[in-house]
Length: 65
View 1 (cartoon, one colour):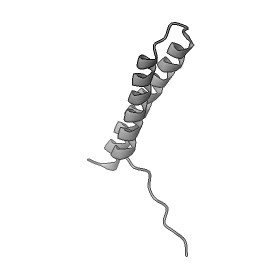
View 2 (tube, rainbow, N blue to C red):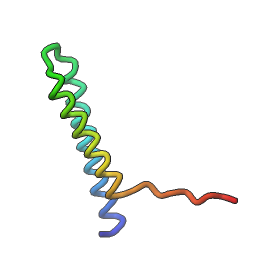
View 3 (tube, rainbow, N blue to C red):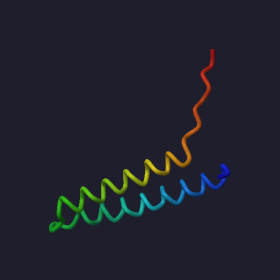
View 4 (spheres, rainbow, N blue to C red):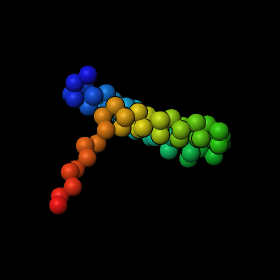
């Protein structure tokens, strides 16, 4: 996979994580929300963000002497 492809996949995953996070925020505002659903949403957000990071890890800066 090229660097560009990895970046695109990571961007899609991050975007999806943000969409789920937005939904989760709205869901939490509803007084009738369930903690188990909130937990599932949080786990999915974290999973998507970890996946994005593993597909396109941040470049490590070289240490300066």
